[in-house]
Amino acid sequence: MSVPDLLEHAHAPESKFTPIYIAVLAVLLAICSIGDDDAAKTMIRSSVEAADTYAFFQAKNIRQTNYELAADAIEAQLKDPALTEEGRKFLHDKMDAYRSKAARYESEPATGEGKAELLAKAKALETERDIALKRDPYFDLGQGLLQIAIVLASISLIIDGAFLVWVSGLLAVVGTFAMVNAFTLAVAVPFLS
Image (cartoon, rainbow, N blue to C red; front, side, top):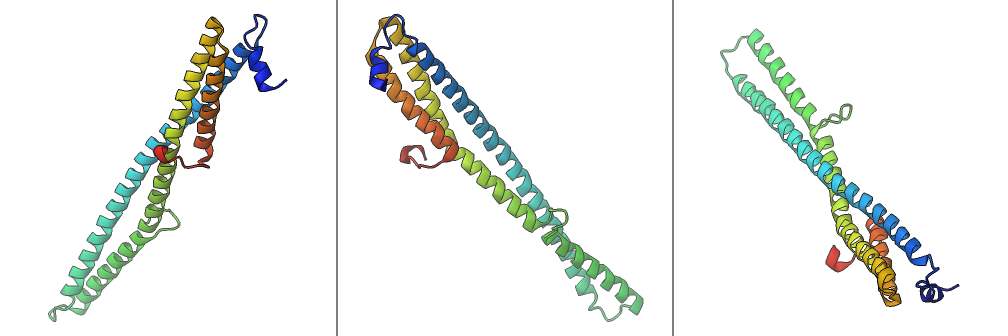
């Protein structure tokens, strides 16, 4: 039986097509709603984590700068001709230790907490946030269209209107496309991007 034949017989008193159709739409709406909630949570989580990571990066940068300034100050003190050999060695060791600490802040692959690693992590979190931001409008559109499709199909049960089932079906197809596109981001719709 073809779709037009199903819609023709949808309003016969014994027909169960429309209630089943409404149930399918409700399931699609639930899936779309779960996807939308996940996208919203991902946007919030990745935004907060990116901000935290950038703050940690900035703190590392400040510490690194402080160590570099301290090492530079010691280097200036080493030019003092009145320094004893013992004092010169002490200051030189301190300067080397500060420069070593400053260099360690640049990259710490073992802990993943060097500036280079933190910057890469923050950029990855921003990318994750941006993808979730792209998905959100498609989920919103999908939910809206599926809700309207359910309402129209429900009304068609009361007033016995096959036309409303057709309009509902059209909205359901577009809403389902929007939902699938939200998950895949296969097509960029200009007014939603």
